[in-house]
Image 1 (cartoon, rainbow, N blue to C red):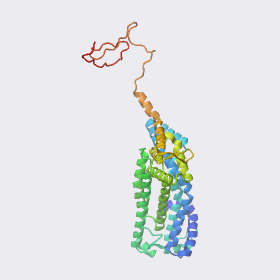
Image 2: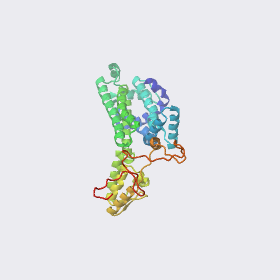
Image 3: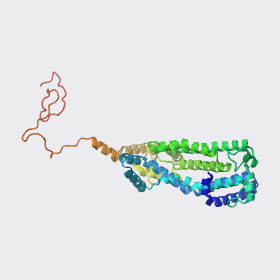
Image 4: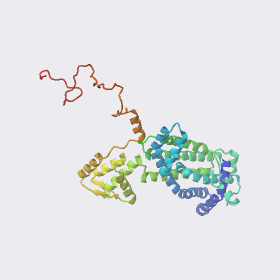
Length: 411
């Protein structure tokens, strides 16, 4: 870890400068040598970094949704070119280019945050050894070494030996209790964040390998963080716990305000929107009007949640309009119009792969130009029915199997 942190030593000076600026602010309130001053400085560093990363987080959300929507097409490409890996890769890249999707966009916030994380780890390691780094002079290093968070120095680790912990004026028991609690909270916050994404903000009607992969990561990531956490200083654990809590809150806000179409979160959002419309008689807010406008524009391509939303509005006596507003009408009329619109919906066109598979199983139709194997001049006799008992159908009589005549009827 020290080797990895040294690779990001170029950013240790900006990171140490930011920490010093926040420390001077909080030190005036809590005291310069307290754990609150140094701990809140690290928390403020996280908040500042995450605010700067909000545009990347928005790109991550869009990329994740695009990847979920493209999973059926990607699976079809893999099946079609399963024996040609090069053609498969070319078609995948073509699909990404046509839809404007970048698979690496989902990793941008983590990649952009990594230099700050490892730089902070490098700074805290130097503080633990008593060495100056960046803009941290010897007085600030000594102040940080004396700072304790719930009895644990910010530079101490779970795996430190007793002699090293005693050199930081702390007990090994306090250090291990504090670090263990932080590791558990860090892992739980990571698990809850991923679980919230999988259970509420995923279209469950589309079963793809991507969903199974995300489900595995939901259990793997917390274990990885727990194993790595025993080698993190307390200050780094504060950093990572803060960024996990920030991510969880940020994701919760996005799920509640801009859920993925077809997900449980969208169903809950549209139910809240129905209550708001029935309560106020109108759609309040620009964002909500945009949502209603998008549902109306979809027409027959609406998902189950959106059709349920339109039906519920109709029962309450409202009809959504193209501009995102609603119109008050008679409930019976609204329900009748909604039912008529539902009947007019055409079935979705089957994918090209299914149409080709169906065509391959159908026998080719004979044309008039095809020659038969019979000798010229021979007349083609109609095939006799099984059993040879049925007579040839008379002119004007319906062909096929005839209904048996009643015994009393004339022949």
